[in-house]
Every structure is written in structure tokens, then in C-alpha cells.
Length: 272
Image (cartoon, rainbow, N blue to C red; front, top):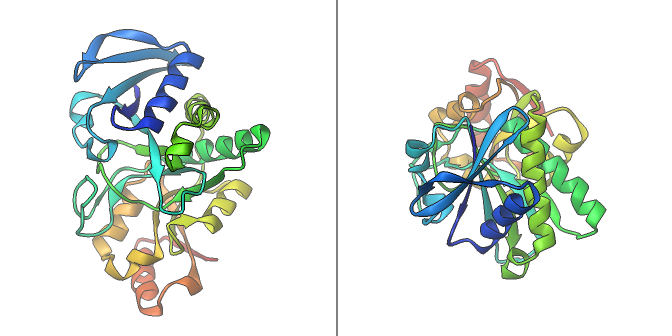
């Protein structure tokens, strides 16, 4: 079973979830969750449920205790001070000791790299077809929850104006369902370096067969230890055989430390 989840506190998440229910004719499931309706339908051979949670999605650490899912997709708002219209995907989890926004310290969720890539590709395609002019991008691994199930966020942002954009909500809704339908498997890679919104890795994923799972941004590389680097490789659904590193965008000492761990794991290093 695949779970799509949205928070009742999240205007964008609710709009995306509503689009999924309407477009794909999800039916009400007999069971409820937190006194909220649960919806269900089969997509191909896969049973998909859609649930609303009362907490913010970043604090939904509990969902893996209630749903026996093989994949969890949170549809969610994205917020930034820039307010740039953005569609994005990323894996949740905390790369450092801080867990200010849910999840567990120094614990990342399992990353569904292939599903994120398919979602990203469809976001780009439909954004162009509908001429909405949103920026489409990978984000780095950040915020909670930290789950032991392959988990990703598909987000709409970056301000209330975009959260209420039903055309953009439809893009996210369709991209998520299309990714479930495809069920693709791509060669997975770890991304290291670059900013929070990684345009370089986005371009690589859109122009090659590579799918990125976890992405460690430049602003955390000085805080990352060997155990977290290993987690980012091992806690990816697909086997990670390579790491793509923004070579000149990281301090040499931090880069060398991370490269040493990756080479000890027999991970191929690609420079960008």
C-alpha cells in the first residue's frame, strides 16, 4: 500500500489532496484516521490510500505506526522568504543534531529516489504545458519526519498566493499519481554540496538517467559526520553507487572528509 498524506493545517497540502481525490475518483474508506476521512483506490496493481493528519506534516513521525505502507508521499506547502513560485521534491530527515522542525536528530528517512525523479519530471512537463512559470527543483534533505519507510515530500510554494493556486495544485497532484503509476527504477546517486534548491542536480536528473535520493547541502557539510553520510547512502530505496559532488562549492576539508567516507563505501565520485 502507498500512502499519500496531507496536513489539515496546510492549505496547499489540502488543495493538492482534494485534486487527487477529485481527478482520480478516490472513494471513502470505511476506516478513519484522527477522526478524518481516509480515501482509497487502486492505481494499476497498487492500493493507494489518502489520509489527512491533524499535525503539520513535518511532525507526522507517528504515521509509520498506523499505516503499513511501502511508500509515503506527503503533499505539502513550501515556504520561503523569497516567495518565488516553486514546485519541489525532497526526502525528509535531519542531517545534523538539530531537529527543530520535526523528526529525529541525525536521522534521515529512507529516500525513494526513483519516485522523486518521476515526480520532478512530470512537474516540469506540466508546468511548461500549462505555462505557469513555476521554478521546479530538488530541495536538499531537511526537516521531519525521520521514517523507516521510503518517504518524500511533493511541495507547492512559496507563499499563500501559490498555496491557493489550484492549477499548480493540480500539477503536484497529477505528478504524484503519475509517479506511482510509472513505478520506475533508476540508478540512484547521493548529491553533495550546492544550495538548498539545487539547480545543478535538478538539471542532471532531468537530462540523464540518474535519480537523486538524499542531497546534503553546502551549508551543512561542516556539520556532517561519517555516520550521517553512511545513512544517506544506505537509507535510499535504490542501491546508491555514485555521489555527485559540487566540487568547488565546498570547503576542501569538508569535501575531503566526506569523500573519504564515500570511497570507503566503494561509492564512485563524480565532480560537477
